[in-house]
Length: 264
Ligand SMILES: [Zn+2]
Ligand SMILES: [Zn+2]
Image 1: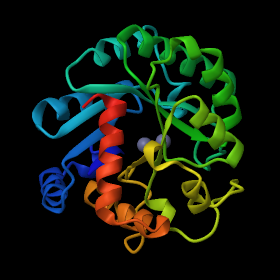
Image 2 (image 1 turned 180 degrees about the horizontal axis):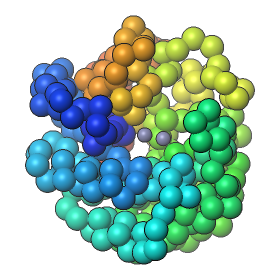
Image 3 (image 1 turned 120 degrees about the horizontal axis):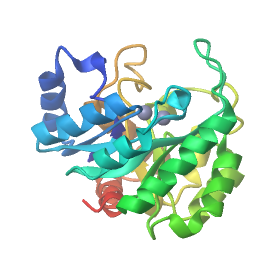
Image 4 (image 1 turned 90 degrees about the vertical axis):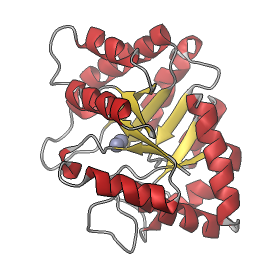
């Protein structure tokens, strides 16, 4: 099993990273991909990948940080993207959800930063790892526009949530789709219209990947506490049960998919 999206590069793991890694290893999580959201956290993800054999990095600017960038940020990300064990540019995309703390970052700015990073991915020959919150339509439009810059295996949407139409468009563009611990939550998330298990049931197994987004989105029954990569197994088991498949089959297929996206 591979956790294709988490943030062990965040300070939530400053005190016990080694224990977290040990638990993941013990339960069968062979590889962990840490994702940057800013220059600093991207740097940290690269450092961790250098230090630990089974850790990998994805570097990029999250749409939340689109309004906090200084001159020359593109060069910084491109430089980081060329480091060893960097697998993709992410998490990049658009986020139109209004957060209590910082509202919505100017969409024009978000789009500018997203487009610049599609170009960086092209420059360095890496796939994309996309963050979408209530912006699926615009993201699909942008990806279509830049289709000629994308790789044949263009990447994945992480922590998927959307409607069926966006899902279909994402699949048609060749992207893989990642699900997280929030699939174990009851009901439909605020602002969404389709339950995650319904989207899952319409996602071909050949395009499915599993992730934690740790420290966030902790699966039941640990919801409320800090998430960690070992819990990806809980989500995988839940997905297997929902799809009427065995855990081993889900494990094998999603690992194969992750290897394909990231050329592991
Ligand atoms: Zn995200
Ligand atoms: Zn994330």
